[in-house]
Length: 365
Image (cartoon, rainbow, N blue to C red; front, side, top):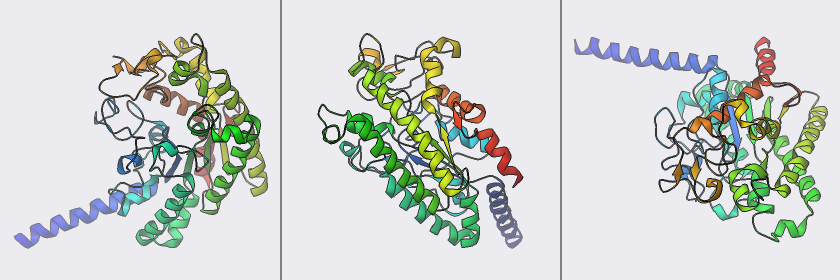
């Protein structure tokens, strides 16, 4: 009787593993690189001040507890995962990312990073962009032990990839302090040119590592974040210098992507103009059901734009009516609206095509 019972248990485990494998195989893998806008919790495992692992972060997450996401709930990668029909990607550093769970993909992002290695140095131990790409290479080695090298290469080639960085190179580098090292080295236009050239190297490396369908986001309207309204804005107006930085960076990013795709002979990289997406509800929040785009839900001081978001902060009762969750990061509802624009937006928002078109095209191959 005991042997029969044990055989049923073993059979159940095998079937569960098999169904998990089939389910993961049926959905597209998803890989995420970048900064705090897309970090799902890697920084929880690092000795850094750039963390979101304490309340009230995660207050609207399904579990109601902080996960390391810089959000009251879901972030942009989570909403993309929902569109792919898959579970959210685990942080690369999570001990749970092993075995068949590797098939889902992985999130390599780390809050505080930028395109440049010297961005975010005040946060100490964060995973720089080239290190994130090194981790992607190591991930592929680990996955190959599970499904073999050939299937690993195929899974990576067919995956959707999201990369989000650039904002910190302005906020936490060029404009971090008056007369910063980079601002003494470069005029703003020349600094933007340098960032774009360095970003291109990152995208090239991503391609060399097997990525064949990559969403590349620009910066949001940097000068309109509550932190910048509190520190640099005048009478509730967005910071002119940071808005100038975004307006220089984003069009050049689109142009660089056009050139890179031409060099590669295929639409590998898709530019997501998150500045335009944000602008919609920052300039006219009421039209999108928000009460305010100036004040953060969680924070301190003017516009709730100072200090970390913690239990001592002001906290709004209804997060859905705020564009910004904390001094820098969009609320869950704003993140959802951004992903809806990625899905169905015109070429004003997504170039050369939107995410729905990508998913439809790739499903036929």
